[in-house]
Image (cartoon, rainbow over all chains, first blue to last red; front, side):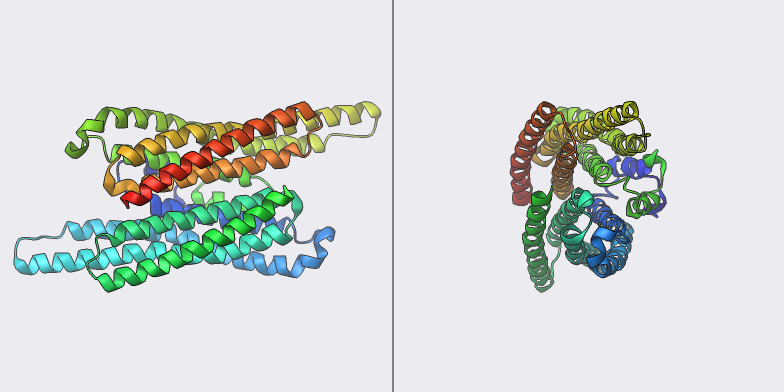
Amino acid sequence: MLTSKTVQQFLDETTSSSPAPGGGSVSALTAALGSALTSMVCRLTIGKKKYAEVQKEMEETLIKSEELRLRCTALIDEDTQAFNDVISAFALPKESEVQKTRRNEAIQGATKTATRVPLKLMRTCSEALESAARAALQGNLNSVSDAGVAALMIQSACEGAFYNVRINLNSIEDKSFSSQTLAQAEEIRKSVAIHARDIISVVESKL
Amino acid sequence: MLTSKTVQQFLDETTSSSPAPGGGSVSALTAALGSALTSMVCRLTIGKKKYAEVQKEMEETLIKSEELRLRCTALIDEDTQAFNDVISAFALPKESEVQKTRRNEAIQGATKTATRVPLKLMRTCSEALESAARAALQGNLNSVSDAGVAALMIQSACEGAFYNVRINLNSIEDKSFSSQTLAQAEEIRKSVAIHARDIISVVESKL
């Protein structure tokens, strides 16, 4: 598992000429880092007298952001696995007509999964941004820069995942799948960008 | 060192109620991840016949992006160290007038360092974005989404570092230091945002 590697090893493996982990796994890790910061801000708010009024909201947000952090973390490996499955499908034999058909079906199936994984990350980022927003609006003012970094990281992870959806859709023959997936991805991308802009302007007013 | 921890441990430590590693170290790690993706795109371009014309540029970009990746990686620990030094300064005794003066000087000194570290990260991001731009413009088209994610990550790391400069400047008494630092940070932030927008539109046209 990529998350069992040290940070240095993860960076070294990203750098290597093997295409995985690539932009998809890096986006998932960045989203997990953003959610981890949201959790930190909640923890630095809970139990502080000055923030007694938002105690309950911060406790709920912490539970949610921890769940989201785990989901984003799982997607680090899922994305690399999906990519490796595409590579394995390309390596299938292609001598007979039957083999060619099977290989093509395997490639198409694996590539669909390789678009579903970043789409799932985009959805997770959309939820993670809600938690970051709460942390930015109600969390400890001393940590507002951390809540801001959380929002930035989650938004760029969502955008990075969008690029991965897009590039994989180029190889998909099922046009109905492509247009539906693209429409969903574009909708999430748009709403996340708008929401992130709002959170960031709140953060900047508090810095 | 934070980079000797596993990715999972790094995430767990960020999540904890200890304020470090926080948004500053997360920004440095995100910038390092961006530079690692730039290097990967260079490696996936070098040696490919189709990209023979840009071989030399890609080799130069790889050397540069690897240097930048190391500099960003070093800043992960530097930022946490700078934050911990501020905390240590606050813990100094403050009973006598002499102690109060010394403590305040130590706090001011440590806080200045805690603004210099993210400012250094912003400068490094500005250089790292140049390398990501080359990878996006000239690199292997199959990896253009990775070059795009590199640019996204580097820009949000720069923005995250800017928040850290800003929040630390609030505690600085030396107004001349504050205004100079803020002016430098705002200039880098602006140029990085403009440059990132350009790169991203190139990436989108190629996706």
